[in-house]
Length: 453
Image 1 (cartoon, rainbow, N blue to C red):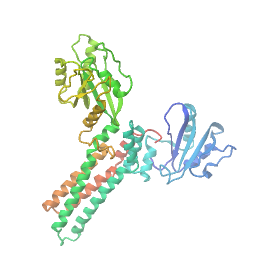
Image 2 (image 1 turned 120 degrees about the vertical axis):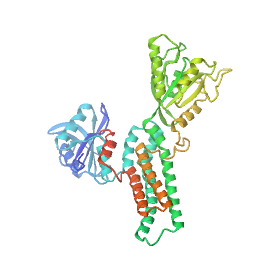
Image 3 (image 1 turned 90 degrees about the horizontal axis):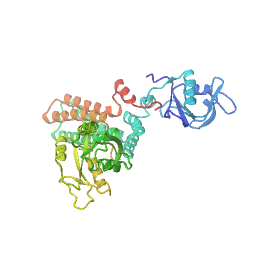
């Protein structure tokens, strides 16, 4: 990617709609669009004189052919999203007209933008740090309100501020250590060393709290797979429909109705969860049902969590016990359905629910959240900022360096080596917000963006 040329892309999804937006950014953005844009009176060259951030109606031409009546808005650098001159052209949202407008721009000297290139330029021009740039894609792809709130907090600089606090604390300790390196005749006093160790341990605790949110961040960004298993007619399909809030899976009193896995996403306490309804486990000679049961077992052992549903109105069967043994080692929540019926049984450790009345479904949601988030504090992390896997790796590297620095200070290791570890810790923390990056890292991050963003 050449960050000095002018780029263009359609910023709205492909397809027919009321409006499509074409974004142009770079040093020649205003000039290039200006060659295609004419005022309603037919005058050319008006775009450079348009007041910044004022939408202007005019004709968009390809040579002398009018392609569409558009609205053009100019954003001047460095105050634009990308930090450079940007023009946004809003035309009618037809497939053909959008393509022709973009082609006219490309013929006038701009090139087609690559995925994420506008946001990359915002990062390179200092409009966003790397953590904020990543959150742009997360805002777009958020599937639940909780995921969206997390992405918005990161976009507004929440993670950046936390990292800045860590960095400032590390810099203070490093400054003390390097001051004693510069004046070797003055040893670090025991009380000073103790204070530095206390600061470093406090930094480690802060990093540990941030790292514990990584699992929540992973689930919010990528979702989780939860398999619903059990014998026929225990209420697996009814539970799926209840969790989704719609009739997604067929419910029937006839055993063996579900022959294949049925997958659908639901929001469970703000977490995007892919539920997999599976065929009922039983002995059968039907080859199609046998294949459905095999697929159900496969889905269960590869899922992040299993809901093992039993019928609370009947006693346990040998097949049910065998199924429980098959799931050994897989995180499992035992769910007793039909507990609204008189004399219902609730096995030890099971959650009592009723898909008919809704009994216990809220408690099941809490249990699913706790099982999926593990170490993350499910009850207390919603107001925080769950980090991504990339952030976790950098923070763990920083913690390892800080740990070695603590050991060095405590054992009287040379201050030069302690300072080296602290500098490595600083660099690892800086990687979170892009203070230290590689081209490969940037390519990996921004290649996941959509065109025009």
